[in-house]
Length: 87
Image (tube, rainbow, N blue to C red):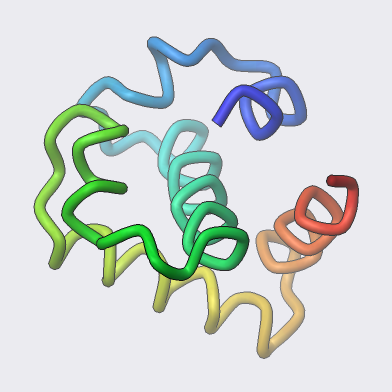
C-alpha cells in the first residue's frame, strides 16, 4: 500500500478512506490488484480489511476493473503495471 501511495502521491489515510473520487479509486484499485497478484493466498476479505473494512465483493470488483484496464492497456493499466514491476 505504501509503495502505491508514494507513486500516486497520496497518503495511506487517503487511500483507506471511503471516497468515490477517481484520484482515490485508481490508487486503491491498483493496490488491491497488486496485493492479490503478489500474495495470491491472501483472501479478498483480508484485503478489504486492509483498506478500511471493504467487503470481498468490492475487492473483487476492484481487481476485475484493474484487470480489464491492463488487458486494454489504458492509462490506469499502464500505471498499475509500472508500479507492479517496480517491486
